[in-house]
Length: 366
Ligand code: SF4
Ligand code: SF4
Image 1 (cartoon, rainbow, N blue to C red):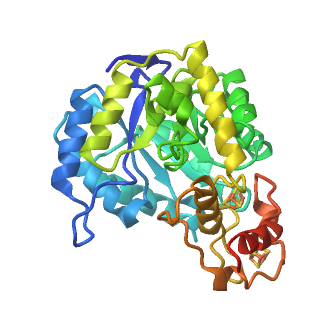
Image 2: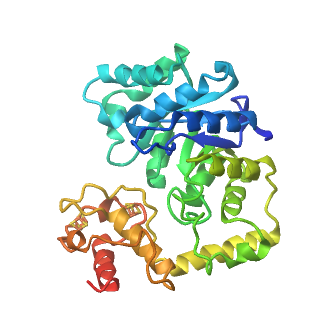
């Protein structure tokens, strides 16, 4: 694995190990032995960026990752963690959350530290609790080396956040299907223009770009290249991309990712054409341009909107088959929608959610 990223942080691997989908045993606990082996395989192949968060698995991810990383000298990898600032009730908790993360990971500093999942609704928490000043102080104390934030919200919010501080890096969702969404290409270009290193999350759009139905990804099949490789090469080759996170959940996936990143070739003209074709195929087959960001959560009727849209898109994309896993909807719950519009006002994709839910019910014959 080549170290291709030498921005201001040192040599970062292009592939980052996301610790949000660790394998579990039958009893529901993380399989530490398997995690140790996966992390060792990644480390030995040159992966040196490891990403967790206070909230992943209620703290289990931090503990498992910290345990696995004990195999290696602390200064030989970069550890990223994230503060759940939106759960703060008072100033004291800023340190409590941070110290808990350090303790769970078994380290005394974080290389990369993020304000986690900032959105329009929770962003005031950054100001209410003076989070940026607090984090800047941690930088001065050597507890945080580089400070950033992660978000899936609009580009207006992205610009507002960028105006608050001289961030060392920013983490966004971006992949070849999300070019027209937000942040999308416009947000990505804003960061490149400002010379801010970018970390990518959801390069496979939560698995959608890995599990493309066969009739939609034929252009990739014709080239003999896997869906995953196309998505990774599309994003990893872009200017300003520091690291691409992949939430690896077993050894096979880890090995596959390592193979792809061990020889990251730039996309040729034919491959770019194939990606454009597959994008069009997916968009044409999908029923709704939902990215699954979850900003519409909190429906007063308890409707799980992203889950319903994901099931609908999966069903529509696979329409040739009789039954495909993950396509069931909770029609009783969805039919309780009172069209209050609370959800739609938060949707960065500007989806008319109540209207789309009606269409969805009709599609399912409900
Ligand atoms: S419009 Fe429907 S789905 Fe959206 S918040 Fe209101 S009740 Fe829930
Ligand atoms: S409907 Fe909109 S806000 Fe809700 S998950 Fe989808 S894209 Fe996000």
